[in-house]
Image (tube, rainbow, N blue to C red):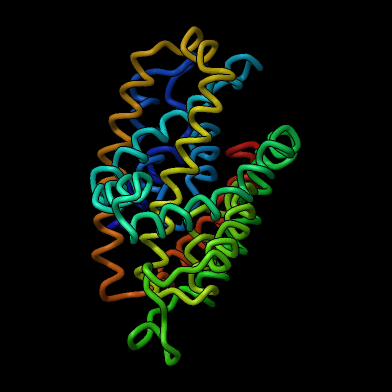
Length: 301
């Protein structure tokens, strides 16, 4: 169901731009909210899809508007964060109890999440400007889509009881395993890679079952996305609201919340019976389509 929804909404933003105004319209906010929500927690790269969507919608030719749009694309992640809070609130509550010293399992998971968060936080702060300057374009995204698709075909399968060797559950995660997943998350700073893809694969490499890799990816993503959103809001939030207005920010966030809830529920249900290979095929197909659009001048890098 998730892939079907992705294909439907992919069509929405592969058409030429709808509006002449470079600023955000309500329609643009809805499209971007849908794209963010559907792609944030599945291994196809929300950043890559949002870059493609904003290009197809012709958003932000002026530098100040482009900067505001880029901030907007980060801030509407609040909707995706709320979706995880809604679905996995039990894990978050257990972590909160662990923080208070009232839950051993919650403290264990919280420690693992914090360890996994540190590498991306440090590298992100050090290389933020370099990443924005050199990697936020469609050609780097296409390359990442292709490589990530091939990686999913290699590591995204689901076998009997998740493989021949015994696989570990979330309660078994060690600091070393969390650090492996955290280092993998650093790779996702390359737009198009997908944070969920590299953290799920990181969990698999560390020894977790596929289901537990996905849950840890979602919970880690909530912390990572919250930190990124607050960082952007503190730095460029006021300028973004001044240029784009608050109404469409709220609209995009609500739409992202609903669509992320649908995507996460659909993906979890899908993974009970299947692996992640279908997302690998989707990424490869999208890389090919985007390459053709770039080479024919329908969209610009």
